[in-house]
Amino acid sequence: MEILPFDILAILFVVGLIAGFVDSIAGGGGLLAIPALLWAGLPPVQALATTKFQGSFGTLSATVHFLRKGHVSLRDMIPAIIFTAIGAIAGTIAVQMIDATILQGVIPVLLVIVAGYFLFSPRVGDVDAHRRMGIGAFSLVFGLTLGFYDGFFGPGTGSFWAIAYVALLGFNMIKATAHTKIVNFTSNVTSLLVFGLAGHIVWSAGLVMAAGQIIGAQIGSRTVITWGGRVVRPLLVVVSLSITAKLIRDNPDNPIYRAFEAVFGLFAG
Image 1 (tube, rainbow, N blue to C red):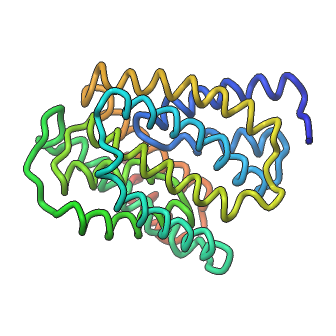
Image 2 (cartoon, one colour):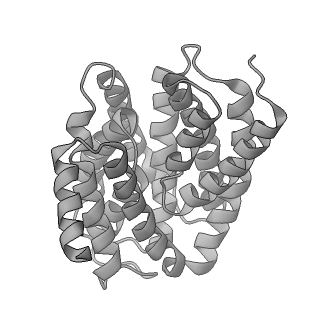
């Protein structure tokens, strides 16, 4: 097993703790974990596999907490779990054959829509609203599509699930976040098994970050239950816009990203 220096492992533990906290509330912890692992000297494939490994512990920790508090029924989630797993398998296989830049160009647009919805919609809060879609159709459509997306690319998956649960099933923010953690854990573990266990995990980094993830996820899930939409709603907006900014910065040659920069430049000017 490859052992990293203690000082690097200490930093990775802190990053894992923060990522677990953010992930348990709004998703997007991978935006912290992957750069940290790349900084630690891991090649991209190892960084991706190790991120899936350590992130699974955080989502599992948050999931267990929400289940114990009665905010979600695992039996009711079985269709969503099955379809999410199928989608994640397909996405993890496809990412090895399809140019990811095709999908990267669409994601900032979707994330800005997510941020706008949570920022301006009066329906988002701590009380359930009217359901617009049946649970069976919802599980099929979003389990396959978002499961595929998480296996294929990943950033913003938690935000997309949250807006789907709130906008289409009428869930309040606590309930939506609890359900999001279960499907996130499903796609994480499935992708890990299909894509990450082929000798690419750096166990010393993964285990240390997993310990931080568990602690951060427990703190984050308790924060969600205590504060509800008052903390989840603004954090979802911040995370969605942060992912958008990072994708634009990391892919300056993408024409859609250049269009974003031009629009932002007009508003800034």
